[in-house]
Length: 392
Image (cartoon, rainbow, N blue to C red; front, side, top):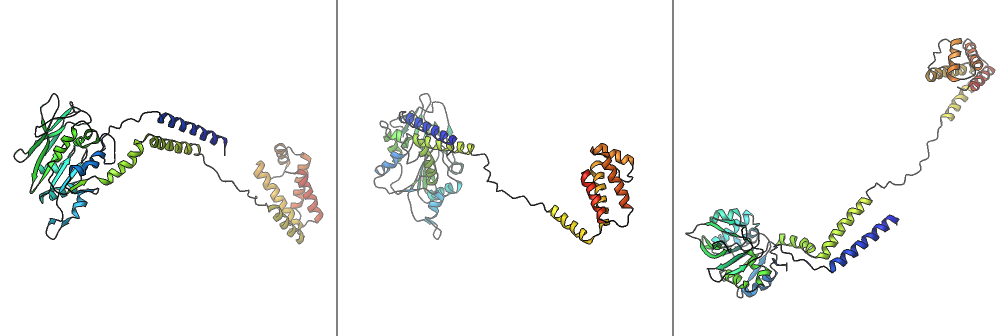
């Protein structure tokens, strides 16, 4: 293992030990973010409510479901006689309602068959507002200091985590106001209403924090929750938990809510980034040794030369040597070879630095052999030695 990697691992282990030591001695901060999840024991989770709901509705069956209301109730609808195969109350508690239009329409249709929907949220779907003809508003002044009551009975203080959301518009001829809320410096406004729809009713409530762990365990606030829920009719309760979204939120939320897991997650990400950084350089494979292709030009030349030699055509060989010699001078030294005179000898001598006498000897031999029709083997040897001696 490379020394740099060992140092990196050692530093990483030291950092990890330091973080764990610091984290172990640090008090766990309270998570005040609202989750409205039945699995969360944080202040604004629904863990306690989920544990106590059976005692709140002693004689009623509680059925929890996580699919959308459309998927859940559409399976319970008989298209043959246009009725539902079940009856009861739908319970829905969350911060911002994420109901899609199909689910809202299904709830409206379920209520029209004589059933009830209880919805406690800080936001309500537009389709539901348009159909039931109501609107809600938000006042951020003193939003953390609310006093809630049912039918103007005893008030219960909610001084943390609340939103001053209330019903600002509704049809007063058919809407019943059940509950109110106020701040220290404002009049009471409606936060709990009952709206009829065909043969059933919608109970709408704007303070879902009333059902959270913090307020169910705080003083006498649980009594307010009991008063609100007492309006739900004595029948089966279908509790919509938004299962899929809640599960996803809890898987990552649980990791981030636990300091040790949270730090492990962060260290894992940082380690991955550092690892990628140090290993970003391209690692080249070992290049195999490739033997260079053998140059067979010399062998080929020797073979061709032997063929010419065996034919004993010495004059032809001399002519080819003359041709190659003069072509080399033209290509490499840029000297005209048309007229092999004294000027040619001087220019070749100047450009090559070769002995002038040797150059002149070559020139004389070229002139001689050009004019011959036949040459002997001795002539070929003499001319070849002269070329080798000049060595251009």
